[in-house]
Figure 1 (cartoon, one colour):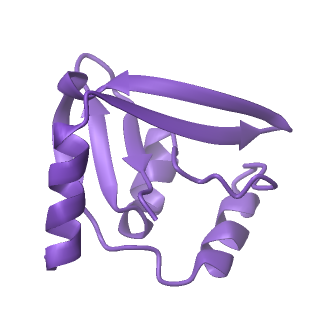
Figure 2 (spheres, one colour; figure 1 turned 60 degrees about the vertical axis):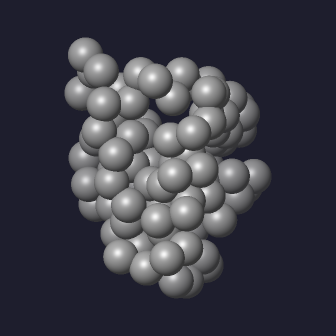
Amino acid sequence: MNRVQDQDEIRVKNAKRLRATMSLGGWNTTIELEASHCVYWQCIVFVSDKEQFTQRLQKTGFDTASINLSLLPELDICQEFKKDCSIACQVKNRRTVYCLDLL
């Protein structure tokens, strides 16, 4: 785990609220999470090729016109793209894993 990832993990953990925006079917949705609700944290490698990441996301049906890829709400998609997210957060009592892209 490199130093930048460590700093990002600390930065997210210290945040009171986390905001993530995603675009689905042309509708932008902003979701706010209480950082204290995150019961699972994992530092993951950064997106090395944003263009390739975008193309792979589009194949899953995500509308990436806004290129705001800070939240991947589906667990299976999150598993598939886990290596492309910087931080993953699982909210207590939910199966959903949020990938928070801090790029």
